[in-house]
Image 1 (cartoon, one colour):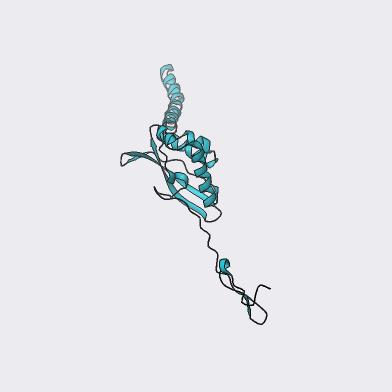
Image 2 (cartoon, rainbow, N blue to C red):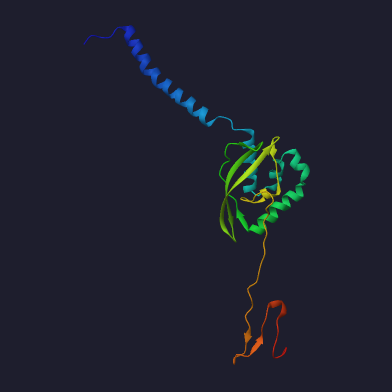
Length: 190
């Protein structure tokens, strides 16, 4: 076998060493461009807002509101609205997916987030939350206190007691009967 000329040997070494390095560099660049690309400011605002909500850090949520929303609702009222909604819904946890890319709808920028609210009274409530973002912050309105609410809707809790059964003596004579607020005692108070 005839040895290769020094020039051919040099080219072969160069090719076998640089080709793998070039391939790794191209793949690293492509991966970096795909994962390291900056997200939109609207998406970042929504992400901070949702992460603060998951931690029940209402003050941090309030800081993510735009200036107009902060003028329309005071921080204590904002915090009270979220605490009241959590109490009414018996909210225990609020895990959320990452926010979607912003979309334009009816002249507003919306960032959708899928949320799964864990409640005592209703179990798991899966719903989308559409955060309107404008002027560098969340354009807040009251229906954002719980996932799935639309503008104008609010959470409400009403308790209705079941009708009370009569209390009977051993022989079947009614001792007490009627609704709880107007209970009657047919044989007297004794």
